[in-house]
Image (cartoon, rainbow, N blue to C red):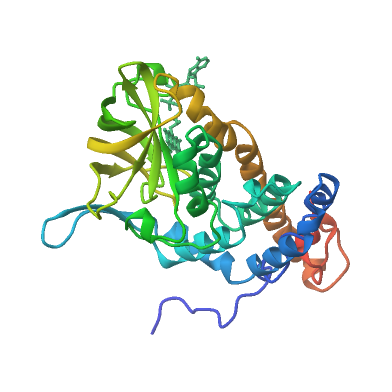
Amino acid sequence: MALTEQPASVSNQPPPLEGYNLFLENRPLVEALEREGGGWAHEQASALGERLGGEPLRWGALANEYPPALRTHDRYGARIDEVEFHPSWHELMRLGVEAGLTGLGWTGEPGGHVARAAMFMTVGQVEAGVGCPLSMTHAAVPALRASLELASEWEPRLTSRAYDPGLRPAAEKVGALCGMAMTERQGGSDVRANETVARPAGDGEATLHGHKWFCSAPMSDAFLVLAQAPAGLSCYLLPRVLPDGERNGFHIERLKDKLGNRSNASAEIELDGAWAQLVGEEGRGVQTIIEMVNQTLGSADAASGRGGDAPRRPSLGVRPAADRATTDAERAGGSVHRVGGGNADSNAPRARV
Ligand SMILES: Cc1cc2nc3c(=O)[nH]c(=O)nc-3n(C[C@H](O)[C@H](O)[C@H](O)COP(=O)(O)OP(=O)(O)OC[C@H]3O[C@@H](n4cnc5c(N)ncnc54)[C@H](O)[C@@H]3O)c2cc1C
């Protein structure tokens, strides 16, 4: 006989917070979209919010429960430097790319950045880790424009609404992701102390030699990398796979064991003669890559990303307070004070603190 008896059903717990429109329930965001010139995207944002309130909530949980794993070698011992993600991560990435979170800001349409920011925040309620590669891919565009030839080759892939994961030559892909590799062990945010070296090979090409201490989304198709060239710190575009299909000299040493942002991989990497192309002017790497930094850490996405899950957090907190009986009188069905102003039948997402 079992020592403890399992209850047949669980009582006095709120129902799961799901099955609602994550955009429409966020009234300040709905108003801001209209006010700031993105009203034309209301229907799209609403459709996204509706979708996110369903199965993607589960994907968000799974992508964090099964964090990415590094696969340095294949079963035959060949170096592959790949990161394996749970399928839920890929579903969330697909959803974000298809919603235009990497491209919508650069179509030239007035309010494009506003529309993108509203949807970026809405996705953030479900899962924040995917915000990193989505944001960096979006942000790479203005930095790449410092070299028009590279921009004309890469921009259509980075802004594409097709999610196309897997390491293959970029020319074979309909969509691509881009990361950034700036910081090193000895300097951190002081990138002037960087030691990674660029050895120019003519025509703006170079090989990169050194390490990076914190390189997020290492499964991206390309990276903007800071390296010391003869004229000073410079910005380079480094593809993970070379045009002939060979893997570039980009080795993942280990993944960071992070407290947050766990669904997303961040890596320590070694650049072993990696082939790269100069972006912008040699010696003006910070001025070039700052265009990317501004779009990620410096401004829009850092703010809207952090604000992303704000509407859902209070709702998750208020829901038990609004829906659980806490006194004998409540348990007996009487009318008693509830925190958050709700009652047992209320739709908790509407409750705000
Ligand atoms: C989740 C995550 C993902 C990341 N992804 C990437 C990535 O994809 N690519 C990449 O290149 N890097 C990435 N980084 C690294 C990130 O850019 C660095 O952590 C950041 O630049 C700070 O560097 P540091 O941690 O070495 O701290 P330090 O630079 O050592 O700073 C330590 C403290 O000193 C303060 N400080 C530093 N300089 C000054 C100053 N001049 N004046 C006043 N205060 C100062 C800082 O604010 C901080 O509080 C990531 C970091 C995290 C946590």
